[in-house]
Image 1: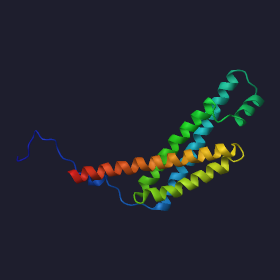
Image 2: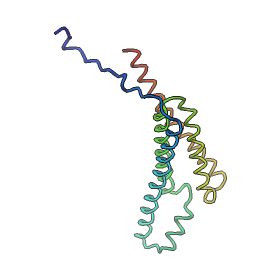
Image 3: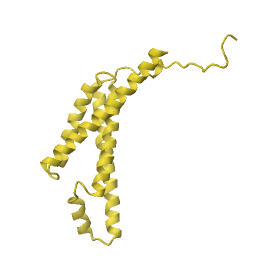
Length: 163
């Protein structure tokens, strides 16, 4: 037994480095995840808000009116906004992880698709200024997710080079 029993065992971390993926596949999967999760969370938040309004004694007409004219700065809109930001950040991370090369370029394509979808859905609901703000927020969240992945990948590579 020539191994020092008091020494920390070394791990082979090379299997944690993933291979390059398809850009189309990464953008498609991230878009599906982002859009479906955002819609699902939006529906859940709307149901919860509607139940709260109904428990206060509001009629169906009042609930429908409040849901369709909700201010961007209301409590439930802010909850939906934060939830959407977290989902979009995760989707940006997922896109970068799946593609694993030229992350920022590929994530730009994903950001354009998600922003276009957001504008298509919110153009009749939000003002031009609010749509611009939401688009910029989406862009920041997508790139935050990509940055989180790229920085994690750099730390892993640095750790491998140090070993």
